[in-house]
Amino acid sequence: MNKFLAKVASDINKPNGQKTIHPDKVEGFLEELPVEKFYGVGKVTANKMFSLGIYKGKDLKKRTEQELIKIFGKSGKHYYNVVRGIHTSEVKPHRIQKSVAVERTFLKTFLMNNRSMKSWKA
Image (tube, rainbow, N blue to C red):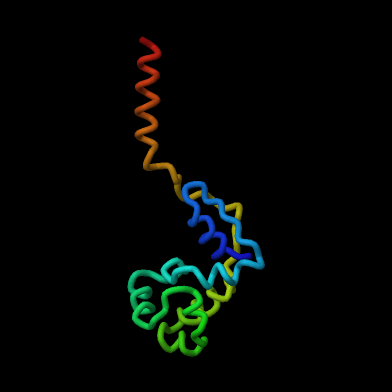
């Protein structure tokens, strides 16, 4: 559907990141999604939403675009759209890699392999 849904779906089933959201299930999925999972909602915004009784996508969806803009400024328009499955960021499947996701385990793996190599040589 869009980049936002792909990102949220891949975060759900870590570490392999495989989750299928069928097009006819997108609306229900977004309505049940906790607001802190929406792109652009950090701790401060989430707490503000909680204070307004907005906990899940369905609560956010009840608000008008004008209400959300009045409360959250320009971000309000984004929240209005994203909870309705509207996200226009372009998906770039072939981009330059910025980091290696396994960097935390690299040293441990290297040391384990190095030890097994030493014992093999002995």
